[in-house]
Structure formats: structure tokens, C-alpha cells
Amino acid sequence: MAGFALAWLAFWLLMILVAVQENLRDPGGDRRRPLVSEGSSMQWCALVTALGFARRHFNVDHAWRRYLTNAVFPVYILHQTLIILVAMALRPASLPD
Image (tube, rainbow, N blue to C red; front, side, top):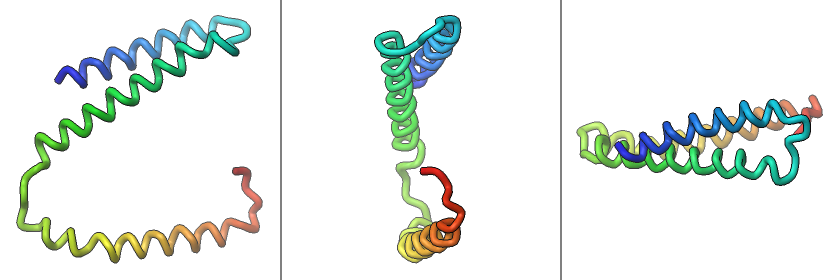
């Protein structure tokens, strides 16, 4: 619960910093550092909160777990193949990186 509160607080602090940055004429260089570091801390707090939630609520064994464990590899192979096929189909479009 503390991780969620920290992530929520970090989110609102980030929103305040973004609002302050928008009022500055040239938000470059050292003025962007607080914004970047606050965004990183918000992401870490949210990630740790999500992992803690998953560990607490989804760390149980279910009857369908064995079936899904066996299905992971074929789905992985299928999605990798689809990614390559879509990438090759989009290559002539010369999309920016």
C-alpha cells in the first residue's frame, strides 16, 4: 500500500513539474533534470507496486496453470513470426525509426 501511495504522490508531483515547465520559455538543460528524475521515480514506484500486488494476489497455483505453461512456447513462436512478417510488410513504407 505504501508503494501505491508513493507512486500516486510521484505522479502528482510530476504533473506539477510539467505544468511549471510549460510556463518556462526554454525548458532545456538543467531545468529538465527534475522532470526526468521525477518521471523515473514515478515509474519505479508504479513498477514495484504492480510487482508487489501480483506477488500477493496471483502467487497461487490454479488448475489451468499447467495448461497455460504448456501453451506459452507455441504462442511465443507465433507472435515472433507475426512480428517479422509485419515488419517485412511495412519495410517498403519507409516509416521513420
